[in-house]
Every structure is written in C-alpha cells, then in structure tokens.
Length: 234
Ligand SMILES: N[C@@H](CCC(=O)N[C@@H](CS)C(=O)NCC(=O)O)C(=O)O
Figure 1 (cartoon, rainbow, N blue to C red):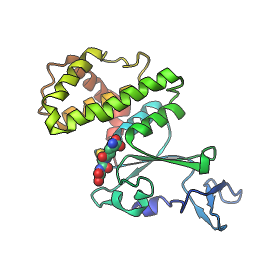
Figure 2 (figure 1 turned 120 degrees about the vertical axis):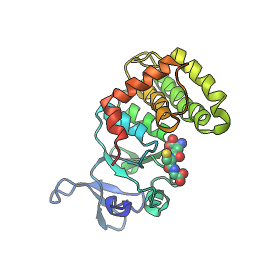
Figure 3 (figure 1 turned 180 degrees about the vertical axis):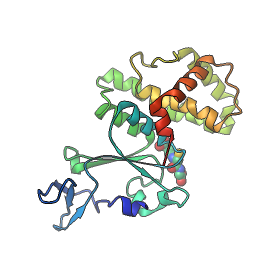
C-alpha cells in the first residue's frame, strides 16, 4: 500500500483536534474551512525502509515497549522522493517520525534524523534524559555515533585509518552487557551498538579480532529479542 493511501496527511499544521462521539475510535482533524478528514489514531508513526537507519528507532521502541505504527516506505519505488513523504521529511530520507498528540503544538510533531528521533523518544517516552547531565551525555553519544563513527565507517577514505582508531577507543570504553552511560541499556547504547552491529552486515570483511569488547557487544546485541524484531522489516 502506498503512502498516499496508508497515511492521509493533514493539508497544513493549523488543525484543531476533536473526537466526535459518533465516529468510533479514530481521531478526526478539522481543517480551517470546516472540512473534516480521517487521520491516523493518536500516537507515534515511524517511517522507514528495508535495511535503513530506521532500525535504530525501531530497536529503541521495541526495547522500551513503546507502541507505534510502522510504515514501510518503498524506497525501490522512490516513495521517499514523492510529495506525501516529502511532507514529512523534505529531504526525502528515512527514518521519519510523526507524533500525534493534542498536547503538542498544532497536535503533532514531525521529525527527521535518526538521532533527533531517538533523543525525542528517549526523553518523552523512554524515561531517559530527565536531567541536564543525562541529556548532555545522551546527545554526546548520539552525535558521536551518527556523525563521527558513521562518517568514519561509511566514508571509504576514513575506513582504514580513522575507523580502527575509534574502534580501539570504544573497545576500552565498552562493557559488554553494560551501558556506556553507567545505568541500564538506553538510547546511547542503542545508537552505538546499532552502528557496531552494522559491521557484520555491511562490512563482513573487517576483522574484529583486535577488539574483543566490540565483538562481544555485537554478539550480545544480535541476541536481544528487541533487536532481532527491529531488524525484521516487512
Ligand atoms: N543522517 C540521517 C541519514 C538518513 C539517510 O541517509 N537515510 C537513507 C536510508 S538509510 C535514505 O533515506 N536514503 C535515501 C536517499 O538519500 O535518497 C539519519 O540518521 O537519519
């Protein structure tokens, strides 16, 4: 089912939410001109593709038991470059998130960038980032994962030099089965461990034996039921 059919997007953000008593469980958006159209039920909708970075927020949501709707964007059919999806992420990249909640300004929030999505989920739904320090540390690891580590991994000019150096440092900081921030598994671990777990998928030729903590972290990540669930995209 295409995006246009699976998600009927509000035409603009200036919507007033109401739940007409005679129309069942769904939510309805009243447009400025008084017209009413049927929208998604209240809640989170995550948009992603096969083998995409949407696996990170999917893993986080599964791990924390947060309910959401999943919309598979058909990237082979260029659905991500078409107007219905560009209304969610004008840059045409996945993942993207819509949170529909009357408590939000305009009744909804649209977000792109996996790091921004993860931080929002952690703070609003994951009981994380509840202090300035917790938030700062989560941001540090998310930015390191998505900017520094990902660039070193996916940029061929850095993969043989900078990436092994970063892995060497990570290997000393990682406590397999533990959390980078010292508490229980959280958003920082999600971002870093997900990037490490990309290695056997996208770069099986990289020999990980010099980094035993990295290897053990990848194995433990692959064994987590929520991770397995997140990687099974349909
Ligand atoms: N920094 C972005 C990267 C998003 C990104 O590049 N997503 C890829 C899929 S993994 C994509 O949508 N590519 C489609 C395109 O660039 O046309 C994030 O972490 O969300």
